[in-house]
Image (tube, rainbow, N blue to C red):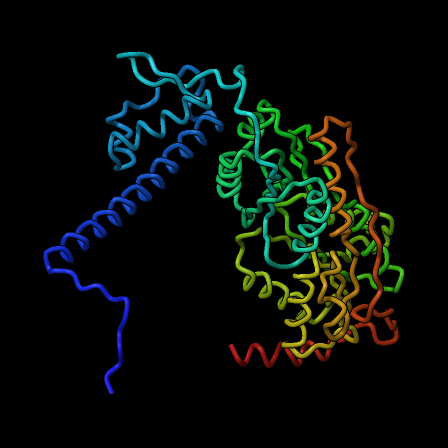
Length: 415
């Protein structure tokens, strides 16, 4: 039996062709408009970023429309739309027949921030302690009708600059920032200074830039490094390796705390040993160095202080791979109280990071700043969390030299 088809209109071929052409034309026009829109936004954002970072300075003449067309490979219409937007926002002005110039945007009223959005810049987003910090911020600011717009830098200054520019393009009301490579020179200081001149409240979490007078929320990382090292020394450990990341302030302060703890015990101060690394460094090289230290026939360490829990867990896995036992052969201690630290075997001894508390406090501080209320920077006291990865040193058997020799011989033969 044939299927009955209803509500179907048959059109002559000529009309079908016309309708198809109209639909095709409409789709193409829409795609062209969307592409043009994306291009003009990109140009606007790029020029704005160069003005904010003072690559283009006030009163400086910008490239001509033709030069901008060549630079960005777009039409004159797209360039003009980007410049029109920048002119409305007081970033540029035109002189008839003279060109486009950077306006004195600092001295002119800026577009009122209408978006109830707070920008959040972290070094990383999806893992480790950051989700809890983000949750704390969001839980607080949402009560006041604000949402958060999150971006991450992967601890790369260039990405930090892009993140700042992108967030500004979204007309954010305030900024919460975890500084990128905070122990190094702040290459983005000019854009931070210009954000301050726009009257946008900012605060730092986890670290600060020394050359910026901005409120902050941080752990007492110096005391943290001192506390964990003191704890190991109190358990009889003398040969302690400290592994620290040295391109951020947390790592530098924790390392200085480690040194401070040894300075209180001059009789063993020459037994400490520091390993340093930076964000981009290949961890394979770090663990090769660690293997050499652990394989020494004499003065092999009995404990390791790690920059954070993430590194501590990697160290524990490595130690197991080379045939040593934590904590029987080697005690390991971390920092941050990462959520999985208590579930690994053995559970990791660490220092608790305030995480969600820091997030809540950051949310409250930025809301207070938006309401023109005075705020005070906050330093959190470290709290030691004792678990199973650290044990008192048995001085009757505090050197596993023979075991190391055997392991080193096996490794040498494998190589």
